[in-house]
Image (cartoon, rainbow, N blue to C red; front, side):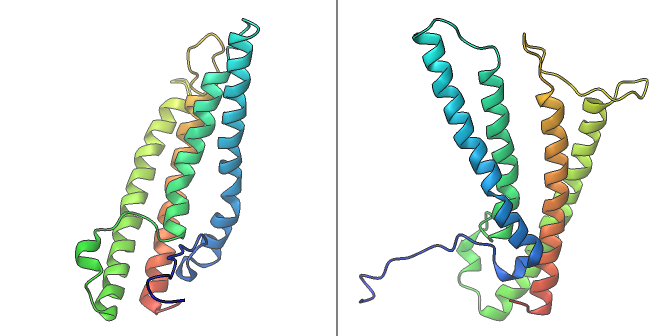
Length: 181
């Protein structure tokens, strides 16, 4: 195979620097992906029920949005474990390997701090979405006819995912600093 015929292939696994945590994230990624497939099946069912039988459901749209939101939230964590997060490559790609390693450490540390700050902000949202002023636990609901607790659940999942994202970036920063692969 010549250079011109060579096919560029992306690795769809966690990078070694992500550690055991990154490998776990990579394995669990099938669950939110199955949620996308389930959302598609629910929407197909809703179209058939609505337009063939004139009997739409009250739960399909909120459930599909919930399932897709879970996948979106998890996507950030998966991108970090696979080193597919957004990076300004205009400068990065032209750096020598040693300086690129320094950039990897700094980028990962800054991302860990940012993720931790966002997790704290999400905690402030969760406090309002999960507890009443009297201190009793009650998840925020959608306010629709079906009224599921999806908004409260999504805020909790976002907080957890951001906390885990901070951990993943911290693991990356440490492993880049140690020179681990």
